Length: 593
Image 1 (cartoon, one colour):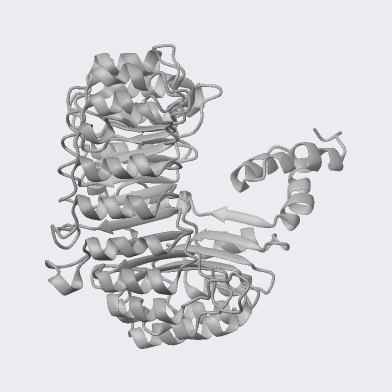
Image 2: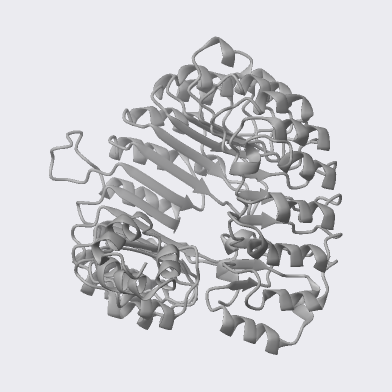
């Protein structure tokens, strides 16, 4: 290696593996590689994505100080304060994505505006810190007044009691270059004022706003809001609305068939998402029925993606009208549709099917018959049947023939070991498989899945076996031996898993060639693990681990000194004690970094 010319090393080896982790690994192999990485690769990198690891200020400085040509930066900011970013906010930055900002205040927006005048894309995900909304609005307004070329803006505040007035009057500061806008949360009245302020000319060549994408998290979705959006923003191509009411909306502040009909005024609309969350109140869109869906299907025939949640009064006829009228439909997601059954998909095989992604979540009347019909769509890549408890083994033969399917979610389904044997012998290149809560699955089924000679043993990278009582050490040992491509594993609430299984996972990456390293492991509430299992998180075991959930296990009862030592040894490892799902996607704002 030392004898190879530097230009050959940089052009033929390093530039073909531009992810930071691979480059750092290669730099440790020899002096020549380290020189090439430091001098001929890192200074010319234009984009860096560190969203999958939580790093501290010191590590960030060592990395970014070498990147002189960076114009796109994506960070997990869970351990970073405002001062961590200041040295790297510069005029050449055009895209900035800051996720999980537990410690960042809204003042960082002021700094972004002052230092990144040519910014085109900005995403910031704040945690609610209880600061006055007026201060937040002031910092947002200043940032927008300086970033006059901004095209894509996404600002989110996450927490339990977020003041939804934080984005009040933001419409007066938005640059006219804005095309994509995502704000969470927003009050309905403020959203109506926003839509009217952003009123666009029907001609794309006009000097006004040309908003194409709008995503809002609201207190309530109403007819007034849909009418305002439809009349003011006719050029919208994508509209995503979600509300979280804390009580049943009144008649004049709810969405009805009338409001749904107005969406048809957006003639360029290809992506529609309407969600009523049950987070604060177990409600639904009770004032929309099949007639509303008929009107939507007639006026929005060019839809390519539809996501609907909380339409409890819509039956098979309403959903079938969408499937039949929208001939270009590629993504179809329905959640909490209590009246939707197999009949909604009865005529699916009689027309050309372009569906690539289907998600039917908590639709209790859906059975294996629907899955068999969906399998006629050979373009299907994602099939999510979470909470469809009547889906059973009989449809897995159809699934195993899908040559493009990469994501399969069977949470709570009536699947057995025999069904996993069918998948294990099939040709489906599944990379993500969720079997959470499939209580009839045992260790034997895991063996059938990974040792059946099918494609899945070579493609499976994420496996969720949470809440399955039949999973024990034997099943985990099978994964450690034959799950060579698995990088994410969830076994939360598997009570029969012991230290033996965790040790096998911790050491398997050493003993086997061509095996990928485990990056994320969820062992929440695995009560069979002892306190001594915490030692398995010490170096050099679990090499490459970025996140592990150890809440409600005996590992948390160990002395704080060992946990502190592990965190010092592995500054990029996140230890989650709070029971969050993988990588704390929905819980990071509630606990300290």
